Image (tube, rainbow over all chains, first blue to last red; front, side):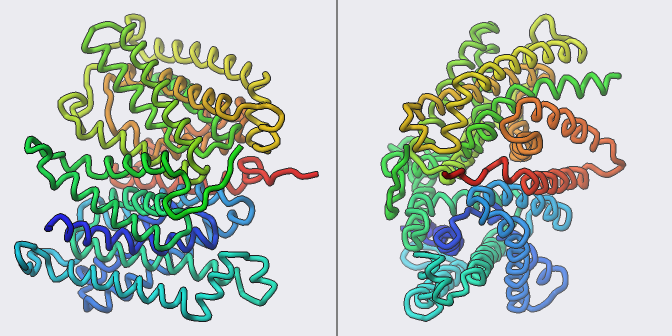
Length: 292
Length: 284
């Protein structure tokens, strides 16, 4: 049971990041490989505001999210917008380059050592043998609220209808007066805000290190690909599935004989996803397209 | 003089892998971002077998078999997935191989790496390495030139430009792409058997993401698909990479600065070469 709760915590973090990205992929058709760095920028900025400038935690989080939004907008303007209309694969390369630049800046400004927004002991609660901290409970709750709000906007408001129209047929939506270009930027920045929120959660629950960026990105994209690219709910579901797999792998005493070292956690989950994709290449909820 | 020989050796050693990668990314437009995954397998298998059995030939044979197997795995995954999905999952494969190397301490020594890698008897000084590497790279360029200019090169280019039309003309995508993946693997083997002998060590840090960026940068800057363009950009960028270390800065600053400089260069060259890297499909 504890493993399930751990999976819920880790999955909530991944779902938050993967959910925003799935919509971006659905609208723009591009992958943003600088995503992990955007998450870390949100987390590190909050750490700096709270721990160094001693601003109140709430204000630090809001400013951390704002900083994440700003850097995501810069990412869109520099590494995505000039390229994605030309060919949708170009941002895959340019966002790798941008991620290196952000990596370098993070190392220069925040250094390599781990940074925790709330260092020290957490308030741990125990219910029928399950241990969970207040911060982790809030993380699960906040993810639920954010994703449900997003789902409401997506399916029940005029803004959501416009977004879905752009996803279905961009040119038809444009001809009906939907500002597709503006929505592209808005959704991209929104995905960056979700990522920044994920980075802040990491900084509160554990600690931030520059090496977290790429595994975070790859895990989010593994969820998106496994769920069916552009499918919001598929991405969210597989974010939780991957987290559960990771927890089961290292938490179970296999055959009563051995534990798998924690270093393999990420590897086996990714390999499992690759195996799934070999069986179902378009992902679980995706439409397969024919190739030559 | 020693520095010059060192740069020549390093440049010539890295050329087989990067030029092979040019065939797949530059010419074939296949979004393969896991070439270092193949390098990891090539290096560890070759040197572990060589050191265990004290036999170079056996080590090279094992490395060759491993490289063909891993390249075939990458090729198979690429056939099953859409191009951009494969791009991301190839990075995942690279990270997975790296995680195995870092955690399988009993075999790979984890983050400590494998020290005292045995050298070929005729490789002792930087001059020996530079000469050997130049001979190897000249032969490799000749091989790639024949591939590029022959019917194979035309098939690969046709598939990258109009996959369906190429297929309708009888070009077998699977065979052509599989060969491209194996060529990258062979290039990785040639590069790594020299490089690790040169530095006397096989270490996980040699397969980090910064080097993948360097490879992509060389291919894009040298004009994707062009062998001699890539050779030229490799020479220039290698001098830049090795020259940066002489900047009067702390190591804590130099590492991140190198990331930023290379990131900016890659972004710039992709913008400059965007029409060649992924051209808009031609139509009648």
